[in-house]
Image 1 (tube, rainbow, N blue to C red):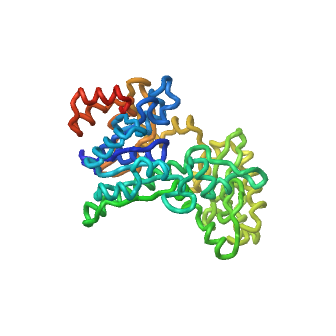
Image 2: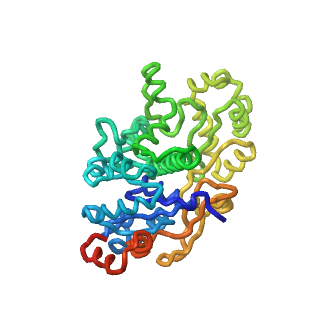
Image 3: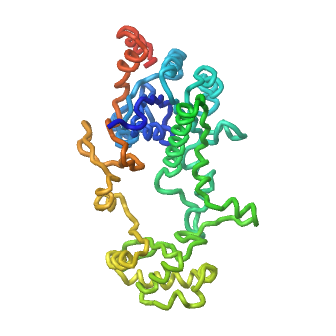
Length: 397
């Protein structure tokens, strides 16, 4: 089966999640991805490996479907090799800060002038423009700047960051979408290459629903509300009788009527305090207490059985152990098992989204540091063994 991005070459000149996972996503669907790493310790995602430059578990997954080459980009000889490589590539993915991009000659103006058909994705903390453009950022900082952290948590406690690097992975999928859109425009609409400027905080801000609209319209500032939704009632998390926790969403008239029957209060949805949306919002504390009382005397299994039977959206709060044991994750293929030469049998996240005719594939796992040097420098750039060895001795690769 031919994958949809076969024939597309991607040079991954980035580190730490958002930009590298953009390249990984493209690789999942067939692109040939060449990952450039520092010759000493390699990519930061290798950091938890047993030895410097080794293969961490995160590296095994998030650097899958890539070939690793090493280049010390602090050296001009290495940067010249990047220029030579780019003439063979369709896409550049990088996340160096703008001052570094300018210093090393990888800034958008230089790249566009030298490689007019190249799609160049820049994933930077604050974007390539604006007063903060030269600042750095990681997922935590981008979450704070986007407004996401501010609204996360309970109202009587400090804000909390999400438990996973959500901003990074949202950014990765936004970046991949930008790349394939630009490729379509270039290859099927007669367009040229172009620069894609993605600030790491922007996907988080785009997920802020109508918070900015509400503020611009009437000055309302969205605040923390814990595990409820101020505009969808009832929708919250609850503790069960057996010490578990679950999420229930009954935020429409029809769902509330069904939930009322499940909890033994069939007339609840007709009571004036809960009969319509404004009333439910105004009296949500009372409504949540009623639902919490039923959940609190019901086991998780009993509650799930009753709610699923009534077609009410609900789920346990799943740990990774719960996910590993869940039949739905397995049957859909959300989880896949792979064999790794170092770690043995591993379970990891499958490529998404699921495509009926051209599903993504895991063709290789995170590579050894510099394992593609000879193949890429020799096969693509025509260097012989002596040249490659000279670069190695000089610390360029």
